[in-house]
Structures are given as structure tokens and as C-alpha cells.
Length: 457
Ligand code: F0G
Image (cartoon, rainbow, N blue to C red):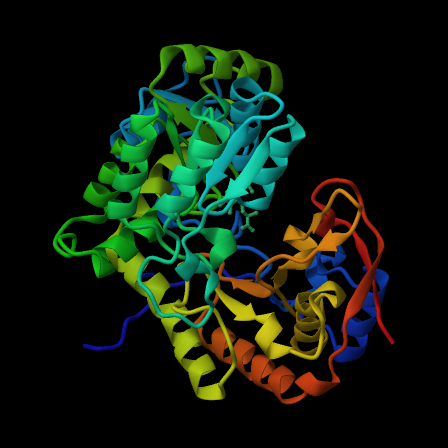
């Protein structure tokens, strides 16, 4: 059979909100034109994120009933440790309430003012945690990764020449670790090849710099490697994941993605001294090391979810959904980052709305119109999220203006995606009438979450 079907059937349903267009326009106005400030009940299809929004399986719900809520040394912790250890091989594993808590502990214990952290592309919370302690986050993505129309298999790879110059320019002593984000969320959910990981590791080892993996979407990355990298077609996703982690000295992970749970994260490493420092801060900020910021039942669900994410049938279905949407966008001639990523479609807002300059935020124009037209909530990954302020106080636009439509795991069916495509088509046809925005309020960090916008007349 050629049709790839959802490898599950639905046992429980949740009603979908269906506000009218008039209600959506009023809701967006009340939210200061920032979709992060909308109530979820005002959204029909919520593609804001694939993080913590997935549906758990019967096995996960059953596992939750086995949650051992003992403060120390619970049996749930043992299962969680055994699973993460089995996949990653790391000796020390510290559960956290989500990925950014792991990042914060890593940055607070390992970094000081003036340090440099290279990454293929930092996610916004990773960057913010690094900058919060006075260090600098550098994105060293390969040039292919910046070309939206280029169809290349591993556009999440780090540029080795850029890494070499970074080490040469700043000196290895200022680089406490290098990071690789797999898949590369901010660059379009693009994968990193095992060859690139090996080369990055080799360069790091030459300068005695540890390598950390941001492993949020490790299973999707493993699937891409199986599909696209020579020599991996016959390997299991688990074997590929193991090989990826074997190249790293540590990892941060948000279990809200490929842990297939609604909350959770971890920080892992092999180094005993780092682990001691991590643990001391974990106890202060998150909780005792055998539960971190989580309940025993959360650890149980994650232990099952981590393995389910490595099931080939599940990954085939997930990628078939993304491919289905991408092919339809090709037919409609709607510009998006090619090839389609693992967890989302990234619409190229610059190409979609070329009449809106970057600092009038074309991504916000597109996100807000998708919401008012169809009740679909997406997110801007452009100058609002990644723009910088230079020394003179001028705003520097981000290199890419993207709108991410992230796909929650095991949540929406094919007819939902047909509805999304119909809405996109409607918005595409009226694109000339879409205008830009200005910011009327913004906080110091992570402004996209809470800033207010006003339409430019
Ligand atoms: N790293 C990456 C690559 C991420 O995508 C995220 C979260 C984090 C770290 C932080 O994890 O949310 O558990 O604290 N990404 C979500 C998203 C929020 O929508 O892409 P967290």
C-alpha cells in the first residue's frame, strides 16, 4: 500500500473552538495583535508550537498510573534514568521541568561573562539563557541553511570553517562548550548529519572543547539520517540516536517534543564534576535529583514517550504529514523553507509579503492574517524573535523572516491540514492587502512573547 496512515486510532476527543471571523478580529485586538496573548479557546487550529502539545498514547496514560511520587529514589525515576541512559549513554541524567531549565543550569554553572557559545542556530531560550549570564551566543549555520529555496539534505549542519575561525578568533579558553541543535528549529527544523556531528566533535576535541547536543527533536533527526545519509538506511532509529549521542559530552532536552509528553526536560553529561555542580543548582532551582521539576508520573510517561518517538511507523506518519502539506504548498506556489522540516512548515514571509520591509515585521502580518482568516495560530520566527539591537540602539533585522506552522504530535488529522491549506490559499490570494506592524511595547528579554503590536496604516 502507498497510503501512509496514522498508526493509531482515536479513543478520546476534544472539541475544537470555532470562533467567527468577527470574534477572531476582536480577540486579536484585545491581544494587542500578538497571537501569544490570545486565549487558546479563540484558536481553531493551534500551530503555535509542537512543544508539550502532543497527544499521549494509551501506554503513556497507563504508565502515569504507575507514577511513584516518593521524594527520593522513586521507581519512576529508575525507569526514566534507564530509558534516557539506554538512548543517550550518558552517566548523569538530571530531570528538569522543561528544556530551558536544563539550559539555565548549564549556562549558570559553566559560563561566565565574555564566554562564547557557538551553535548551528541557538533557539531563543538557549540564546537568552547564555546572554543572561553575560556570555555570547553565536550562530554558525552552514550557508545552505540560510537559502530558503535550496533543496539540500542537511541544512541544519554547522559550518566547520566558521567554527574554526570562531575558535581561532576568540581562543578555545573562551568557549566552554559548543552546541548542536538537532533538528535545527530556528533554521527551519532542518536536520544535522552524523558526518557533520563527527566533524564538529573532531574539531572540538582538537581544542579540548566539550560538545553539547540540544536534543529536543533527536528522533526526527534520526529519521532524516536514516532517510538521507549514506550507510544508515538499514539502521534502527534507536541505533542512529545512540550514535548521535555518543559524539557528545552532554545534552539538554525538552521532553515536550520528542519525549512525547506535555511537560519535562533533562540535562545530561558524563563529567562527574559538572554533574555535581548541575545537581547542586538543580536542588536549589528544580528539586531533588531523582525528580527534578517533575512528578513521578511525568517521568513514567516520558520513559514510554522517548521510545515511542523512535518507532519507525510513528516517524513515517509524522513526516508524511509534513510532506503532504509541503506538496500542496508547491501546487499553490506558496514559498516555504525547502525541504520541509521535521516538525513544522516554515513559510517564507519575506517572499510571501515582499512589499513589507523586515522592520515592519512581515511575519507578524502573515501570522495575524492566518489567524483572522482561519483561526489558525502560527508563530513568527523573524525580526521580532531574532532581531538585534546594535551599540547605537538601531534594530538589526534577522537574516530570515519565517512563519512557523508547528505540528503538534498525533493531534490533527488530514482534514485539519486540508483546512489549513485552504486558509493559506485564501491568505495568499489577498497578500497584496496585508500590511506591516510596529511594536508599541516590549520587555528586555524574549520580547516576542509579550510585546504589543499596532498595524501600520
Ligand atoms: N531548544 C529547542 C531547539 C527548542 O525548540 C526549545 C523549545 C527549547 C530548547 C526549550 O525547551 O520549551 O521545554 O523550555 N521550543 C519550543 C518551540 C518552545 O515552540 O519551538 P522548553
